[in-house]
Length: 318
Ligand code: UDP
Ligand code: MG
Image 1 (cartoon, helix red, strand yellow):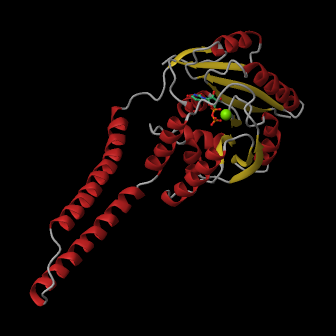
Image 2 (cartoon, rainbow, N blue to C red):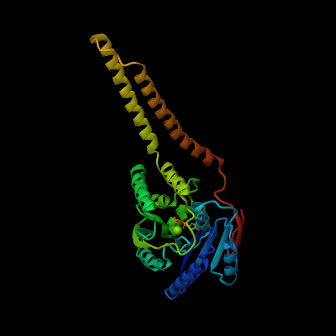
Image 3 (tube, protein in one colour):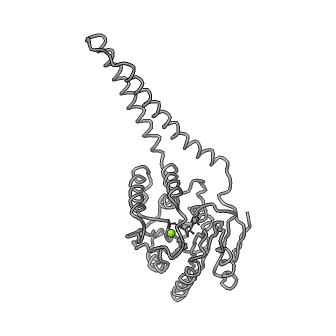
């Protein structure tokens, strides 16, 4: 019987505290899947770590040929590390997973079974998020609601990047070279049959999250602006509403002047409305500017990431 190939892609940034455990759990899964006719390899993308992460991976790759390492020239960010991994992966099934063991690797068995039934995109859907703060839970819930209103592509709520994809989805993904990347939205855009796989998200095994609030905010902002042009539409509608209000006001003033003795409201009203409307205008210029800035970034056409070194991986460096 022909053996199938499955590759696990895990981005790592300063994960020296968890890596040994991650490797143990990945290797256990590898042994289990070997009995089921599947050859598993791991591709760790070191996203410019400045602790001993790369050294641990380098040493482990010496006697484990199924462990591949791709080290980037600096910290490019989670989404770019994943992109680099996907660009260099080659297997029938590809799994994207965080290295901190929040997404239990053992679940890959079930996900693979679903893919074998014909699903091309088996995405992890979080039933619960252990030990995450109420603040993160609330902001995440609000963000997914807002995003689904703003975006034309259906992006399932409570999903992350943990998923298993097949070759056609992988190939399509590699052809999408946009600079502003929101992978959990890009994959649903590709299409093919998809299914949610519900699971309970664990606590981080060790170490701290690499996503402080500022990075989360930038990530959410990026998701909205790269996935939707609705803000521009909303801006146009707001413009129409203010014009209508302005005209109504003008008609009222003319009426009051010509047909009644009521004094027309003076300077205060003028100044207030002036400052409100100029505020709206500046805000909208900023909004349009956000899209222009994205065109500017895209226009530069720089590479999405740069590779520093590789192990057990045949690839040209840059
Ligand atoms: N990560 C990365 N580059 C970064 C930030 C994070 O490769 O700039 C990796 C990190 O090592 C981990 C995964 O992305 O394997 C998810 O990060 P983290 O667990 O910190 O995010 P959270 O689960 O808290 O959202
Ligand atoms: Mg995590």
